[in-house]
Length: 426
Image (tube, rainbow, N blue to C red; front, side, top):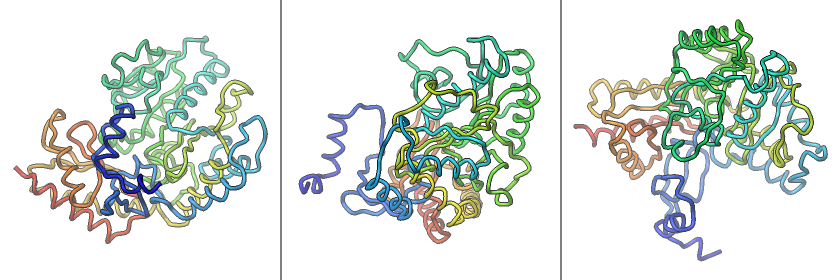
């Protein structure tokens, strides 16, 4: 493949534009290698990765333990489907359920698949356990949510770009404002057909919108009082990203490792993906206790690749890295340092108005409209200065580096960010 190795960045981008569907708008940089917190482009330029594949690469690029587990299993047995047992799935299911404190797991591949699985599970529980009349169950969701882009999921999105000309849409969802406990209480009081409340502990795609500290616990308590399932989408926020094993949950193996543990709520259904594999392989999961999960019977849900041997081996290694390398504590410490340094700068800045987040999931709000290209231009300048990030919602830049970053590297990145922002001061 020597010709491929020598091909220019421009030529590679042109290939994607010609032969690939135009469903993404990437930053114009062509990467071909990654290690830890760094990535390199085809010309050999080195960058800090400050997006981590939307928090899939929490454990760092090409972590040797995770890659080793993947390679070793790939050379032994890759796929059996669930038509047969394999010697990796059972041990993984035991490991992941104990790790997060649930009775059972339903393994899938992608985040969107896991969300779809959770919705099906919630509805089936509503009909067979709660006693809601079939086809009448409703699930509460939040405005400005992002749970994926399948037809069902965009049915309850209010991103018109994701919805336009993709209907008809799936019924059975009620949207309420995020971080509004009164709105949740009102809906729960007015309908007996509510099956569940699906929520992101932090709305990442919406701009790392972080709710009140007590919002999740209050929401969980309301769900408990109304016999409604509390469903936490931790695909982006989970696996140590926010300085806790889960952003929402205190019932897990990270007891005593979480900040504000007393404000966290234990989900009835937990949705995981992304960093569950350290970005090495598509792995997602839905976890719940027996009273919920046992409504699923053979033939009612599945996936050819869900729970395959490679996924099982990779996920165990990825979760072991979180504990072995103290990524929870590191994310918490570095996140506080990051926000502290950026807040110092913002006090006198005319281009950046706010920094928010938790752990190493953060964002800055740029002093311009969502329709402007200022945030995009800042990200282009950050790229030129050796740091990769991407705007979300037009005027917000999300910052989410791998959790293996150290303090020296973080302070170097803060310097790059502030120097770049100063060039855009008005």
